[in-house]
Length: 438
Image (cartoon, rainbow, N blue to C red; front, side, top):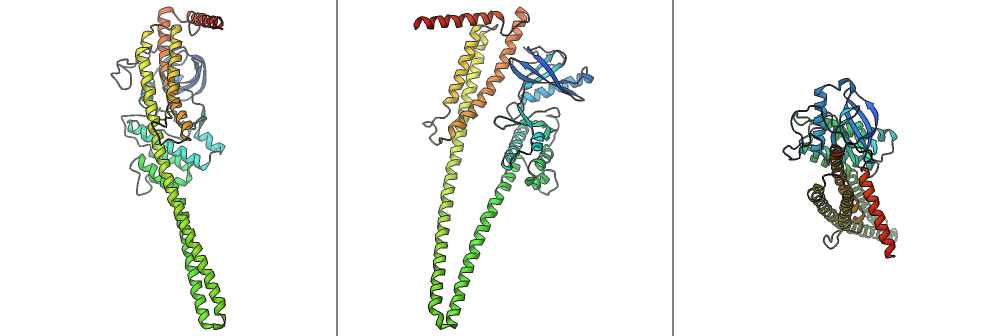
């Protein structure tokens, strides 16, 4: 187990004491250095069959206790805001050749800078990404963390799902009062030029500055709705002008009738025609009003359905959390070293989690759910419990690996040879029993 991990949970960050530069190895292989900056070295590695990102101290300042402590503090902030749109950090460990490193998830995706250069983002997609950034930064600020260096280069969008991920916390802090509004304003100006006026207010150019991130989201939503309002106003104005023109035309015909008695019949027919137009316009206005009421009712029902789906999602996530935590307390605690039974227990856990995802869509419990909510709800719940499971699984494997090294030395394979042989023997017995039944 990592010596900086606090099993008694006496500190929110999970660390104890002063940093002395010593951490425990966790079976990291295939290390490939991607780039080296003035302060950090960024690398990619493989562990437990997955790709991970390593962030360590640059070689020029490798012996600096201040830089090592800064890296440790960055991992502490990673842990503090885990699950709020930040790349998931699984540990802080000693890596051969790199020294102390933050081990975090490998995000499959592209930075906003790269996406903007490609020019393939549509207007709606850019607005969605911008709103996600504002929401995530607002949530992180509620946790008491200021990012400090938010930019297009350290915000990524996942290839699958399109979720926004903040990848760099090197300038984040808790002690200082920093405002990320100016960074958001810079991103907003490049990503969504239509929000340029809102961006200026964030930079302090306008007189009114948004009080918080919720207020900023409201301003963005209002800006999105403005074209629709203008279209409605223009439509009503055009209808008013048409009605006014029609009335003026009718009165003109009446004046002509008074002056030219010989054309009375013709003018009367014209008047009847215009009255028919007015009646048609009245019917059209009535139909538009009914459509507007119907649309309002549909929007109300959809909003209620979205709230219900959110409640169903939160309930399923709570069940997944309880299931994983119960496994951690009552099942994982039984294993001093890794055994073949461990993989059977892990299989049972994933089966339970999958069942929670399958049962999240429950029309009997949540009658407001719609048919189209089923796929989205299952996808959201699956993404949540897979994230939680991967976090715990990495933690469990690291502990079991450390115990194996301490008890029997560094194993040549993982899992150890004895576990592989036991699993192979059980599979053979199971196959033989199945053949006998047939």
